[in-house]
Length: 94
Image 1 (cartoon, rainbow, N blue to C red):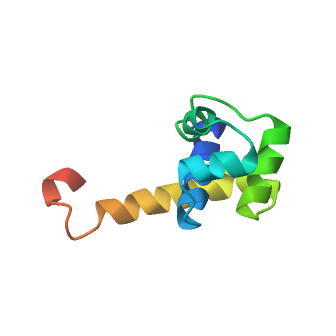
Image 2: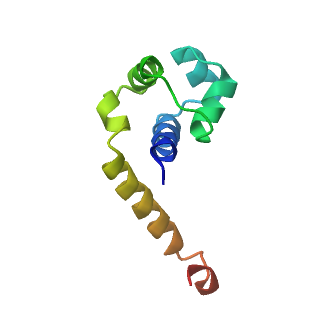
């Protein structure tokens, strides 16, 4: 995964966990909803200023959002958990 994809994953995860809708969060941090959608889809890269506003809106340090090794491990762990979920049939796990 690219750094852009890992940032997008972490942004989406944190925003969702904190219960923000895309529209509300975009308004809160001063970006358009369309740009937030593009960031979360890894179709755009944030500027450093935007990363600071996003991190502040999520109440996390910017460094947490660019700790790509940790984010990758979390992403892989989540994917592994999903594949091992009881509702996933064996044929999809192989």
